[in-house]
Length: 198
Image (tube, rainbow, N blue to C red; front, side, top):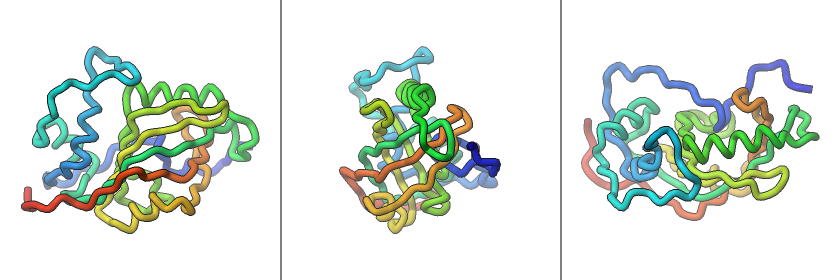
């Protein structure tokens, strides 16, 4: 039976952060490179489409605005990799929600997904998640490709720890209860050294 309590935070529920009182933050070049995949031409994108051969400018006004809106810190620890998740029709997690899983994969492959406060129920505030590819790998399992950053190294360590457990969360957009499985971090990076400032 579905929970009557409000939905828990998840990668699938995006909220717009409050304004930062005009304070602009210098963006992390590592996440900016990942965010370059957000650009949409003609309102659609193809799975596995080849990106343009040019490397996007790290000081792009578009990317700077995205970074400001999600409150991306100037220096972040970053992890890349994959993870799997299972979607269910109820919080009891006994029946696979095939349609909700299909819709979530389609949405990520077409639009990408940027989470300004990814899984704060597990990591606390401040984790920024970017999900840019999804494949259905089993009837009950989707596989996602991610880039995730945080100013707090301990949050990235916890993300990459295969023992981290994730409580089930509700996705209102796809009317699906999700059970995230451990994240497999294939690459990690420390904050880039360089000048700080606005």
